[in-house]
Each structure stands twice: as structure tokens, then as C-alpha cells.
Length: 321
Image (cartoon, rainbow, N blue to C red):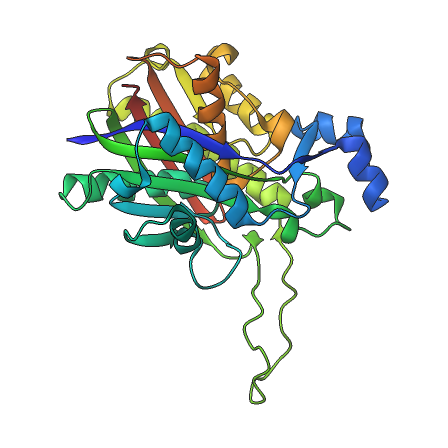
């Protein structure tokens, strides 16, 4: 017994910001052409008055409705995020409160790989008989963490939430998680001293730092490595996979994977142009859009692959039921 996904949903901020508007708002020396040619991003959604709990609850309710499952039937709630609205309680608990459910609720911090980590945990819980129906919510409010005076990072990210309902099934064929520990190339310091009068040293500024060149190199290499490993592990050819759902961080990373693997670009759907990098919410948002468009049919094989801070990575292959 493995798992299958029976419902998807999204929660989006209402404010869309184009590249040119972002340049005007921030006063940065950048442009639509500069951003588009380097990243493939044309616009992103940014929170104004929405909280991450708001977006997550919207996504959760839509996923449950699409699954035709009442919230009272949930056995577990997992939220993938690196920073909910509060340090505690967990984002999962806040969503559970809004859904009026009392099942176990916990956050997972796998950065941009959070969705695949959550799928792995859900599969283990279901295989162990600990749960039957699990809600996974992936949500990030990147606009609260990037430095809007740094054009190398603030142009890359957006905000959003996506959710899936997972239950017993036979869809999951392969999953692999891993990390190449690196706490410096991509990090978000936390203010940890508060008003402790005994604390020594200055607090770190809570702004996302990224060594773009190092992260890009890791992303390109690990994506190619993980896709090849998954195909070899299942004795598949690239054409045996119908769709490759890669983390939507940068169009150039996706282009590199396509070129290296020699696979038709038609098998690599994209939403990075419309959302930028929404971290853990990236792949489930893409998945939801494909489901809504009718682009995913029963029996099709999907390969999901992501990378993120840590540096983490994860890949899974599933047949859509």
C-alpha cells in the first residue's frame, strides 16, 4: 500500500506585481528584460493584508472540496513551511483550528522541498496504519523575508499556498530524500535573543541570504542527478514519464535539466513565469493548475523533483490514479 492524491487546492494573494512594477516600487536598477532573461519570471503574487494562515486555509478548503472529503475525516494535517505566521503554534495547528478539526497537526521545514518531504511522511503514516486521510498544506510568505534592496533575491520570490489531500492508494512508485549539508549558501537568520539581558552578541538581521551562483550550480547538478537516479531506479526511459514537475525556482534551471536529459520541453510544464519561486508551494501549485486544466489523466506517470535550503533535495515518481 502506498498513497494517492485525491484533491488539490491553492490560496493566492490578490496582488500581482509585474517586473516593471517591482522595479518602480523598490527603485532598484533592474527591468523586465533583466529579470525575464535571467530567471524566466514575468510577475509574482505578493501579500498585502493576507496572512499565511489565510492562504493556507483557502487552499486546504479547496483541496478538501475537490477530494469530496469532510474535514472531520482527516487523520493528520502536515504543513510544509519554513516560517508560519507564528513561531508557535505551528501553521498546521492554525489551519486545523480554522477547519475545526482536532487531528494531529505539525509543521515540516524542508524549505523548497517541503512538499516532497511531507509526501514521504504521509506515505509512512499510511503504510504504518496510523492514518488514512492526510491533508498537506504548503505555504510560504517570501515577501516577509527577502531584502527588497537586493535585486539578486527580491525579484525571484513570491507568496502563496497550495494543498493536497492524500489517502491510501497505489500511486507512489519511488521517493528519495537527501541533503548536502550547507548552512551558508541559502539561509534566513532568526532573532533568537529577544530581550534576554544576559545574551552576548548582536542579533542576526532576519533577511534571506543567498549565494546565487552556488545555489544555481547545486540546483542544476542535483536536479539532473536526481531525475537520472529515479529513472534508473525504476528501470524507466525518459519517455516513460509523462510529465516532469520540477521546482519552479528559475526557468534557466529547468532549461538546463531539459538540455542535459534530452527530454522534450513539452514534458516540463511551468508556472515560474507567473509566480516566481514560492518555495514549498511551488510544485503543489503547479500540480493543482495541471489538474484544473485536465492536463493530468489517470494512469499518467509524474516525476516531481525539488531542491532547497539546507541544502536539501527530494524526488518522487507517482502514477496518477
